[in-house]
Length: 294
Image (cartoon, rainbow, N blue to C red; front, side, top):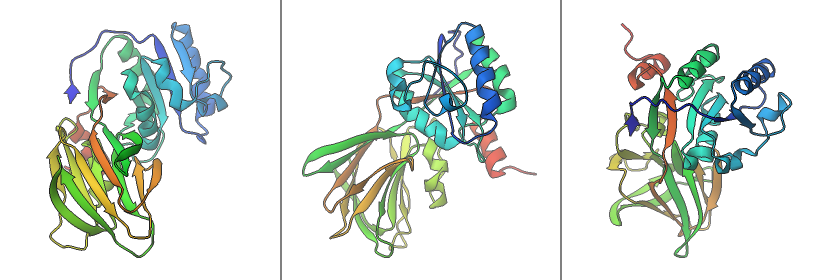
């Protein structure tokens, strides 16, 4: 869901999250820290950001959500924003992505526009896009052995080079299909423009209340992506024989999957709250995917 209302609330605490190895951050982060502290913000940084300037309030990224910052400033690429969203979404933190990467689908704000954006945030002149997230559990012998959240997608893939995996798909415990494929992707609307798109899945507008299930290189030519409401439970049972499969979330968090395991996905309790200003989703598509050129 997207909330297009403007909020007059001025953030009081800010978390700085950044991508390591970016030379421009040596100048950018000290200046940003000074700008924020001069205006009375309580500033905390993740460990990656602390490499670029001296600060005492350093918090591991995975623990930032427990500090409940009002705003997270994410300087990096889409991967950095995905990591940040998983870290702070439960605290309701607003997330502003500043693009230091290449594509910048989620981190669409240019570095040159950072301070005008911060000034607009101080005036409450912003829009909050509430992006649905997935909560995915690895189930073994009837019990969940791990549960993680994802903003883009969960992918269950083969670990062997040549063999196809066998997947059974259920939606609200109703059998849907059996796949022999390289992988199966469950994507949010946000993630519909990521791996799922490359595998032939549809593009979902971010405010569509749905998930898309996309098989990757399925053996059956009639197998196509399936779109379901985001209120359902999606279960993928994995039959690998003696080999392992692999489950990855947002391409960043992963674990092996054994024969007979299931992956169960539901809509997460908390969305990621991404800030935007003027650009619409279709304008971003036009810019990043070269749509609509005349």
